Image (tube, rainbow, N blue to C red; front, side, top):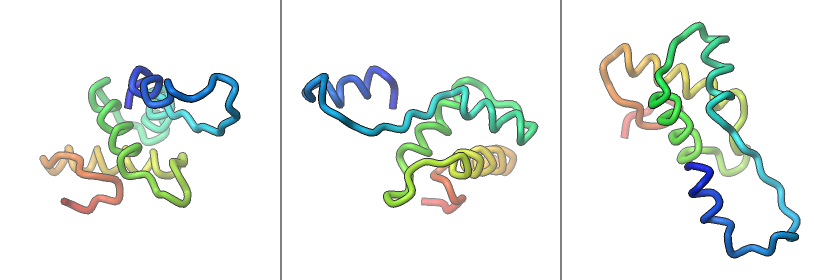
Length: 92
């Protein structure tokens, strides 16, 4: 999801409506990238964020751990020559 898509998603809500929202950005993936000592292209960071968003846990949402696992899964899949399917490493 992009900021533009997010704006489109919420455009019909009243500007003063209370809400709670967690926003994860490329810089968050980059922080995990440093901890995991891996290098990711901008497109790979985008793919990881899309994967995390698309497969987030309905009860727990997105956490630092889910981003870390997504980065690890992506790197492992890249090394194995397969594409990222979703966090947790299961193949679709």
